[in-house]
Image (tube, rainbow, N blue to C red; front, side):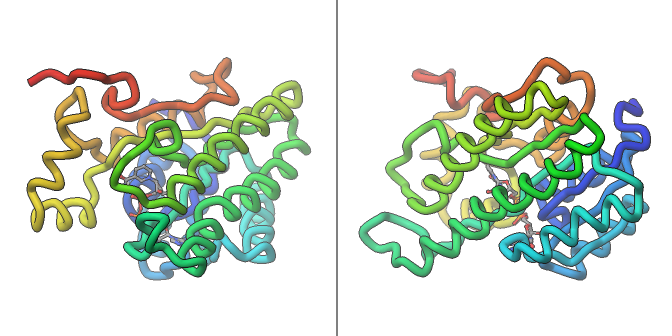
Length: 254
Ligand SMILES: NC(=O)c1ccc[n+]([C@@H]2O[C@H](COP(=O)([O-])OP(=O)(O)OC[C@H]3O[C@@H](n4cnc5c(N)ncnc54)[C@H](O)[C@@H]3O)[C@@H](O)[C@H]2O)c1
């Protein structure tokens, strides 16, 4: 399907995981993709695969974020899609009792301030065209509590969710849709490694997933492509759950 033919898309954190799967999916659907990442090797390789552009960007840096979206416009003539997806979940961010202010602030910067900056500079360009789709990566933890806390991560994703809702409402009549994507746990190398070492830890989480497994990055990318395309033209300000049913579940199948 070529739903994104000639649309210009920026993907932050495009070098790995959900971002990389989305870069590939966007390219397959005909988009011109600008990959932003702090990891130059990974970002360059993703951009090469998509026949797109790589712009090394630290999403916490205002000047770099402004330059990223300006580059997309300068190179491809406009901006249609912003997938603001880069994020971190470092081990120092844990229970509120043990998480220090440094770890708290770092996670807020990378996960929340970045989405503020990327939305700000993306929307500015989209307003010039009267059209655009912004997709901000939140998480299912923005709508559910866990006893296995990563306190700053959870708070940052709650911020992404409510900021996206507000932006979706504010810009709805100017042709710009803004949605918060809420993935459930995704099968990434990090997760695999963690759970291979500790199967009990994996089982404790899997029991809550009605589908009985974690998502593949491609399944999240498919949802992002839908939100980026005109197929989702009546969807804005949403918390778009792609979570295998977790948020709807009480008792799951055996
Ligand atoms: N993996 C999951 O289970 C899961 C679940 C829900 C939400 N999410 C969210 O999805 C998003 C992507 O996660 P992922 O699992 O694909 O992660 P990942 O670690 O595979 O990829 C994240 C990418 O972001 C880049 N990045 C990190 N800091 C950056 C910065 N300051 N500036 C620019 N780029 C930076 C990294 O280099 C990396 O390429 C994150 O926002 C994450 O919180 C992930």
